[in-house]
Image 1 (cartoon, rainbow, N blue to C red):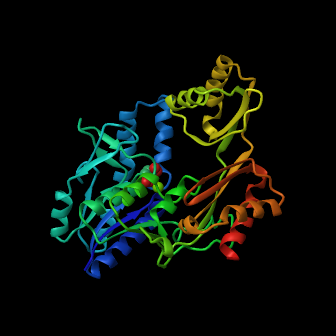
Image 2: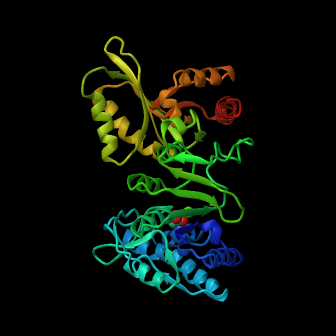
Length: 403
Ligand code: ASP
Ligand code: MG
């Protein structure tokens, strides 16, 4: 007998047929003798729809009320799943986040979990019930309902797993697990059986949409292993945990981020303090900068280029243009026609030559590299957006298929 936390995402409970399917799966598992806590997301696109309803009232909805509204999406799923479980003859107890003991701070729409008081969950498990918990929500110290950021049901599931010391957390979704590249774009993408928290985090920051990053960070911090698998198809899925360097692949995945834009500032005076001024101004406005490149200064001037999320491009341009005038830089140019391709793997930490191999691979496909950045387990290149697809396929061939 195991104590299991399962999470079903929005696509797994998108309609009544799917909710019944999930209920059946949960009931079968219970009958095998396991104890179950099931965390659910809102049905299908419910959260997006609720957001657009709110925006019809006011373009920038107040965050406290927005959270109250969004929290209803997950509660609908809880109620329906409980009914379905009971219709199959098992007892279920459904909890909104605030009854499940999920205590957060007051940062509405992106609240952080402060602690979990699992006594109510444990009580119902003792009564042999299947406990169904609304994902993505908690209660602030001011007794208002908060949400945990988009995709936050993952975090609910991981955090409950830690709080009740469950044996395993299973994240059910509409794909079979984590792939070596987006299977919709790379037809030879492979399912990865085991991957480290760090690789999954790097994948998320490189454009692969797998799981909420905050949930993975939480799992890493508290060493909570979890499995990502498909709701509707059988399979072992992908195990995510701490892994030893020698177990890790040199390159486990290849990804692409097409939501980046490049900003270049030309002829910036090459003096101490200038870069600090530019990037602290962006930081203050909450703009995340990804890659930064400064060329070698000549006759007292240098050019600086960096990338931001494409949605922040115009805002960034306004801020940077003001500073450029102040410091006497020549001009600012924005370029939305770029993308970032990355290779990720913990094994590259002790394997020389990976960067060279990546650059050669791109060169052999006639692709020019405009910017490069590296971490211990990732190498990223900014290239033209039109070359992105080809780069992704060629890098996957080089590092995953032919390795
Ligand atoms: N329903 C929320 C969202 O769409 C939370 C989740 O699905 O995890 O972001
Ligand atoms: Mg989701």
